[in-house]
Length: 283
Image 1 (cartoon, one colour):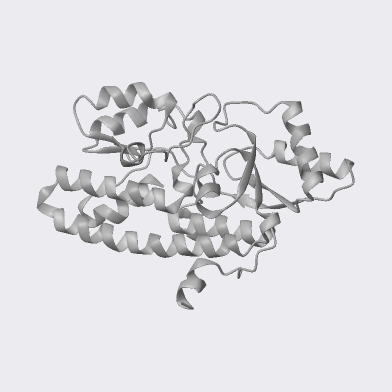
Image 2: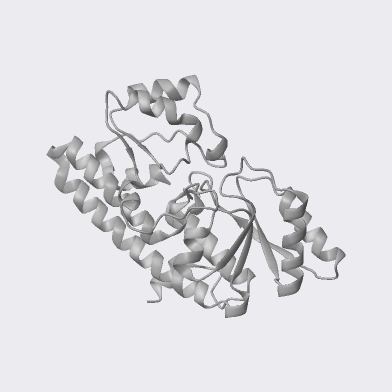
């Protein structure tokens, strides 16, 4: 998601290399020798922040002594009451699931590139402005899609608690089997409580995630079935990673479009399966 921002804003003025590839869980990722070499060879480094890259913190600190290293959540961290924390006061790093929050990340990238390469300042500003306009439309689509779900059905249950920012921005109630990080294992009691919740609220669908094993969600489905409630797997969501390069879901806009459209349709919303691009054309 960060690489996608930088490619949009930098345009022809940079070669952008992403370290964490699609389908990889960033909570668990540790830098390889080749990654370390790439860090030292780079001119500018962007990372998410909010402890998402906990296993790479040391190398980011070391490299940052000699070159620009920036968290794209810098501006967000300075916004009062924006950052979500859990009961242990651990940061929720999944800011990209709220489009308006991720727009602040675009502004951070723009400002850093302008400072590093002032000769192309105007280009970075123009590129960022064009991308931000697209994201404004995406945010409007997300609001409309989620609001099409019947109010009592706006409950999102996923493998781990990655959608708190989306829930707050677009009006969902969200429950993850695991916590903010996939490092934490879900206990049997966690599964049992969510099964009871599913049955009590007659929730029609739960969702797996592309970068997280689906066994916990399958346990929910089986547990609900044993209690006489049929719940479907509503689809696979992109939580910590985008889709394959070269596919629509391999872009940030395509990823959010996929997630929002999948959630809305599985939970009874009246949104077209064609999603955001068709919605834009029809406006």
